[in-house]
Image (cartoon, rainbow, N blue to C red; front, side, top):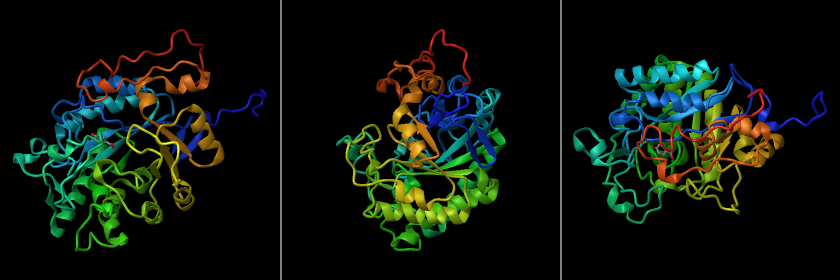
Length: 377
Ligand code: PHB
């Protein structure tokens, strides 16, 4: 109970995220929006992110490619060129003007890419030369869409580690408060982690320790570059998106949590096992994030189809410190306020415009609440 007698809403309680003071626990999840033309962030990105920023809130930017080989979709942003760094600056400024904390998600698509996104039309790179058979859309025709990747040589791995390090440095130069390393959802780092994809016989393949080596080298290099207190990692051990699955997801998650403890990073951001696809949750899953939550010593962020009630429950029960909202935040730019007022009405996300390239439609035109009383968020 508060002094006034009302019960506090767990999602709206403050939280200390390392050096950052947060006024609430509702995080903007990293959401690909494909409005960064030719991989360069655009001015409309500043409108989109600042719409979703509130004082002392935590926002994670959409996946941003770390190098020329990192991209897998049209018009996703990058953070490897000077032009991209300069283009991010006004977007980051817009978020900071609202008083929020903003992390840049660093991403490499690996084999979830096509010739057209690769330098000189070469094959995408991966831990393997096995082709992806099923992408996030679960489209059976996906097998035809993705070319066979080129297996990275052992001596090339440090080059990719260095790309992440430079991208992290660039993110800091652009003004971001930190970075989230994307090691989930079937992209490059996840391809190394998961034993149904990683078929290497060098020190980056085979047993669990070897499969985790490259992602952990990336995390260490980035932490050494910008400080572990500015680094988070996103993981989805239980997911099979992008044809990327592991036979012992819990073991994988626990090993990564233990290893990340040793690196002292700020947070671990986990996708819920119930998310059977990126967009659909199942009512039943035998898995839970709790064993991983118990091992990880830093801040634990959960994501995957949460609503207000479930988010409050996760915070109250100790299952999570923060809850990331994707589609609900995409469609409701004033989500923290809607949660505070406990409104009945939410805007519905329109999947047909998630990945369109329009600078406004389905991007910055979701309505805010009208005539709401003046409140704290
Ligand atoms: C994802 O994390 O699922 C993701 C990342 C980058 C994209 C699309 C989806 O461009």
